[in-house]
Amino acid sequence: MAEEMDCTLAMIKPDAVAAGKASEIQQLAEMHGFLIIAKRQLQLTTRLAEDFYAEHKGKAFFNGLVEFMTSGPIVALVLSKAGAIRAWRELMGPTNVFDARLKAPKSLRALYGSDGTRNATHGSDYPQSAAREIKFYFPNLQLASAAEDAATAQE
Ligand code: RTP
Ligand code: MG
Image (cartoon, rainbow, N blue to C red):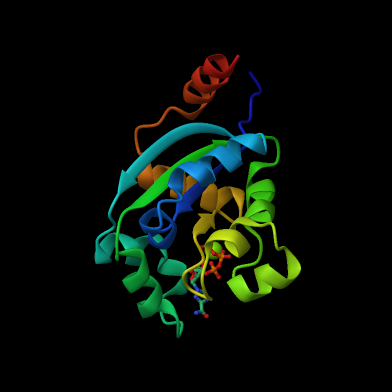
């Protein structure tokens, strides 16, 4: 087992869960070589959504983002793969779905999102945010042993 696990925190957002696309998105992740280390379905409260996206507080889209993120269940996932953070963001495509459709038509956001806010998936942007976000949803997760279990299960 490598000393450093390459993990990211992904969310399948309320639009994609409500559209029944959660399983399909997880299958696509696995097809692209991501191991699903941990998974949780839950509905965010306003307070949790505001905490999760605290870096965006005060921005014009913040209230709309919180409203969207609390509108229905989400699926939070810990994904592992070499270069997981960058690889998952690559698979998601650009933040804005209209950009994604133009620039990365096979990306998750192009395929499953609907506009600038309702963009189907989330992925951590830096190692520090991945650590914070994994802890946010999975405070008791022992990352190294969970990753080892997931890798063994896949063999
Ligand atoms: P995320 O954090 O969800 O993975 O997305 P991201 O890094 O690609 O984009 P970020 O700038 O962190 O924005 C967080 C989420 O806010 C919503 N958003 N809406 N209407 C808008 O102009 C706008 N801009 C951002 C999106 O849901 C975006 O993913
Ligand atoms: Mg972000």
